Length: 261
Image 1 (tube, one colour):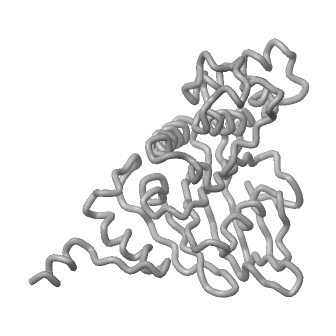
Image 2: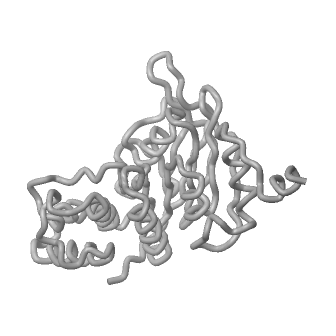
């Protein structure tokens, strides 16, 4: 099954979001090229998920403009698909039935079932199509949520900390799966994460959010081709810079060696 999509670019200009008198985001300017993977990194509560929701039309900016593929986002956008921290599967549906929710409603039933099973196979769940969510692990449920999002063939895939609740081993497997799916599909990906190493492994660029109200502190290019190993020497300095920006300063290996002398 081919999973090639038409990736869409994302543009934010002067974007802000306030809840009453509380301003969360202010003057966000950011351009994301079609097919690019961008990680949003920042402290808890800084507005990362709010920004992601505005790209998908699940929330609306109180100032500025959000555009996907050159068109203003004014509501839930069919060009985007979201994977949340929790799988959010319907417990009374099978895994295939949950994936089918991402498919066009006018698709004939036999095609809906066939495509749902194909998308489950893409996320390594062949043979589990008829299982209920309660019968599978958390990682398998999250892979089902990813399949449901991919079934929409989105121009932009929005990932809102989708691995945060998973154990370490499952988390690594999911990261590899997302990297593989993105490489084969070509879709644009925006990833919200607290994990610096995850951002360095998966993203082409990392956007560090900070300040009060939150703005873009710095945008950093990640060197090297994906997939990456965050232990690569050329990423050590970038990792230290990002951790320092998050208020967790770390010495690079060279700095530690110099300090020891």
